[in-house]
Every structure is written in C-alpha cells, then in structure tokens.
Image (cartoon, rainbow, N blue to C red; front, side, top):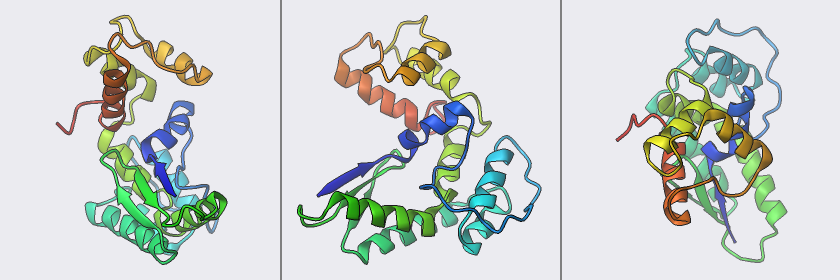
Length: 201
C-alpha cells in the first residue's frame, strides 16, 4: 500500500481561511501564554506554540524561526517513527511525502492512525511553518499569490484573479480554467503551490 501526502496542499484551506495548525490536529498544549512573537507569521507561531504537544516542539517554535536543522530533525523523527511500524517514507520536493506501508493487505485505517500519531508526536506544526515561511515570507494572501503565479506562468487567462481562485477552491470545481493542456497546467500549479513567489528558482 502506498500513500501520498502533501503538506502544502493539505494546508491550503487553512491558509485561505486564515487559520493555522496543519500538523495533523495536535492536542492542546499547556495553555500558557507563551512567547511574544513578532513578524508576519507571529499569529501562526503563537497558535502552533500553544497547540504543540511536546516541549521539544515548543522550544523549536519559541524564537519564531524554524531552522534548517530543526526542520530536518522533525522530519527524520517522523520518518523513524513510521519506520518502526515498517512504513518507509520518501519525501517529495513540494514538502509532501509518499509512504510505502509494505504489504498491500495493511488496512488503510491502521496506516492513517500511525501517520497521525507520528505526525502529532514529532512534526506538529514545525515543518509546516518552515515550509510556509520559506514559500511566503511576508505571509501574503494565499489566493493573491497563487493567482498571480498562475497568470505569470501563462497557464490561465491574464484576467484570472484571486477571487476566481477562491471561488474555484471553495466550490472544489474540478480543474482550474487552464489555457494549456491539463498535464502542463497541473505541473505548473504544483510548482506555484511550492514556490508561488518564485523565490527558489
């Protein structure tokens, strides 16, 4: 059984709705006020710090920055947690992963339960915030930057707007109104999703 997951895609709804916390529905933390975060992602870091399930996660989030080393650490711990159950994680370029659960007879519910448990225990919102800050440092409106990227990449009409993007997302209306073939459009969409501002080449 193979499972695919994308951190960016899974968190798009939260970004569009202005909510936070895409680490797999973590339980509340200790309820303390926590650090006074500053910057464009301050509210997101504060919410993640409050909902963190471990002291290690709270420590990583406390300075309002997730370092490369911390990002690598939580991903490695997550993968190791799944490896202990016999599941192999392969990370993808867009922040997601594929999961090989070995036998096709493994119940999907069992796999999902283990993934969620490892996610809450080891990743929380740490890797999500690292990825979001990297792709959108100023925390600009998600629909605005996605629509602009798709227009810039010439896969939708020049008139395609943030409102169009929101309507498409809210209605789950199938394919976007690409002006190119479906395969090209979806490839460019994935690239925009990973790097909407063109900051990483």
